[in-house]
Length: 250
Image 1: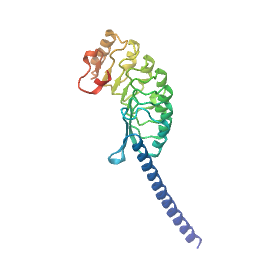
Image 2: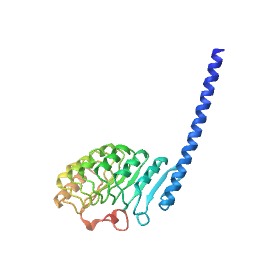
Image 3: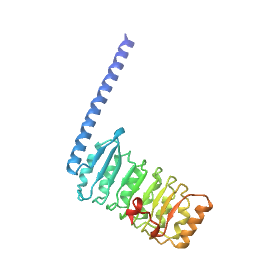
Image 4: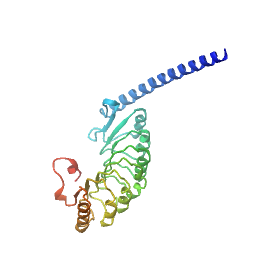
């Protein structure tokens, strides 16, 4: 009899657990839908869901240039946000703190925001799945890159118009999967060339309007040619591509 009652208790426990999970899932889905509806209504349909339940977030600076950062807490209720595009809008490190629970982020655009080194460190520590990161024209410095090595999947990094220098490139050289690196309008010099050479998977490097000299540029080109590395190095502003891509970063 004891074994019988033990089996019954276990069966009931499993049923209760499954029921609890179903109820919890329903509550979470309701909360997610309420959060999406609230944000879309207030910020002009910024959230879109795609197949495989991927969620894209895109703030339009022309419609929502002023954003209440306390509203970012609602993103914590939304599962599987993979793309977060936040360009030319007011944003500080407080918003990044709210977003630390978004563990599936793959693309993060924060250009022309008020992100600081503290915010960049939070991104590096909390979003290990990031593949693309755009920090153009933000007030970050090289100090913010101390933990960038945690972003092991990062393959595209854009830092146009920032205050980064050779020190930042030293940290960036830890990123083994880097394919596209934009360092236009920064303070880098020829001293960072050895670190740039460490990026073995690099395919595009943009270094126009920096302190890298023509001699440094040729050193890079010769190195890539000697090692049979197909890297497109843009040093002369006249060589920037037209009709899209990084052309709009100039």
